[in-house]
Image 1: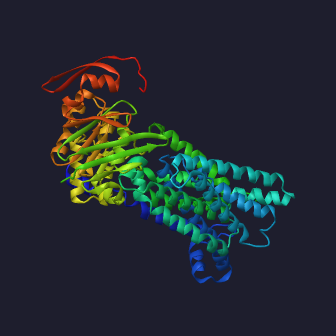
Image 2 (image 1 turned 180 degrees about the vertical axis):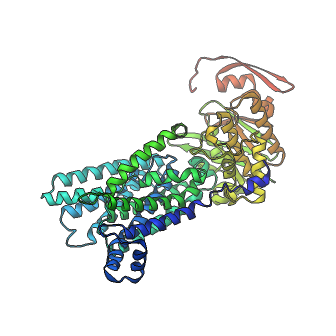
Image 3 (image 1 turned 30 degrees about the vertical axis):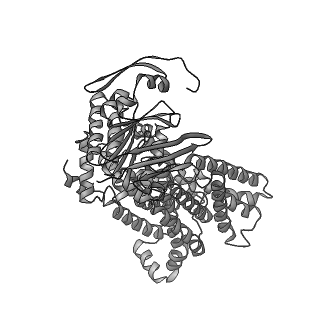
Length: 342
Length: 265
């Protein structure tokens, strides 16, 4: 092998990001057109720009918010999955290992339980984000700033279980069946009937979280050789851990805050793009983010196309589709996954 | 690659409640291959980690020339000290070339954006460990020995003036043991400080310029192999009855039997 071929090898994967962006654009347009009142793509695009007529109201006020949320939340979930899998060097990691989504859900459930959601429209999302932040503060307090990754995960799992148990307690003590229904439906996850208020509320958190996660590429690259080697390569491992865990929690909190619990997108998205990126954890970050956005957009289009009385909950759909895909990926790569575990 | 001396002065390191190293006074010079030997738990790995700046020091100092390692920025330290840990796998099926290219991270180079110098260093490191032709192979598909050599190439590719390697030949077949030790000695002769932890005393005596014998966190002896590795020391430190004779290719060391455990071992 010559020096030139080492230097110039680009592995022909530069198309991944543009292709995913194009896919998001197409799915985004479709998301504006699909629904109980189907609107042709061209009309939807025009209505989005002009905002006129009933099509304008439907596209701008009903479908645009959920489209934007699907992109933002899906992207955050994808980035979170890629960063956490890189940090933990474990292809099965997602933000639930640090307890943040469970804690965010508990925050939201408490608001529903006390019937505050109706009084203050932003009480629920704020409580969810607060729940995630409290959980991460607890995890870091228990594990310590320089706590090893294993300690962080153990603390996160414990706090996640605690939040799950508290959620179950809230359901079982619920004062009336309406509250139970509300809580259970919330936990299933949905992008239905979200407004621009939700977008404005969640977008800053989601954007900051994703941006922070995208900065960790260099450290993740070094971490693929283990924490000790990464430290010897000049990486501040403790800081990287805090940035990733903190950003994941904020992202998970904001996602749960406006959309409820949506699983498997963060787990699956990195797997779909990793082989296209030479398995490099740094080069996986951006494609995983875009793949997450595309996946959630596609799922949100699908729930509107599935004929049923009420809309199928998107969290249910991502799990129903995500689990088989995930099992298939594991089965196909069990050889290399076994290697990773060893 | 002109290297300063690695100077260890009054070094103590505590791991939890245990004093892993106590009061070490050592100097490693450029041009020499230094080998650290000692029984399990003697503090060999801790010594390398302390020199690499990866553990807090309880007392004393580690310096490159007159510059304490602890005062260097992470980036500067990473450019000047390359470290190959004993344990450290590779989690993803990255291509061998990409793994070796990680050694260029301290120079601000990514595997997909190597400088001409970086590309040269990566290609040379791959060739040096005998993995030419394996560049595109996923490391997870390599044998244990091949993988160990790929990780060594990663440390070589940094081209740091100080190279610390923890058991670099433990997983290798006899031919590759010789090859890798030749590479390390060659790197030393080119002006680097090279410090290796090893268990094979005969190989250590043959390739090293200087041997440090550690026992329970203290340096029992340091110097030329034949001066350090005497039958008496092997008995006292390793608890073995051994016959040591010098030959043309270093020392011939035959461990005849393990002695009954004595207090403290």
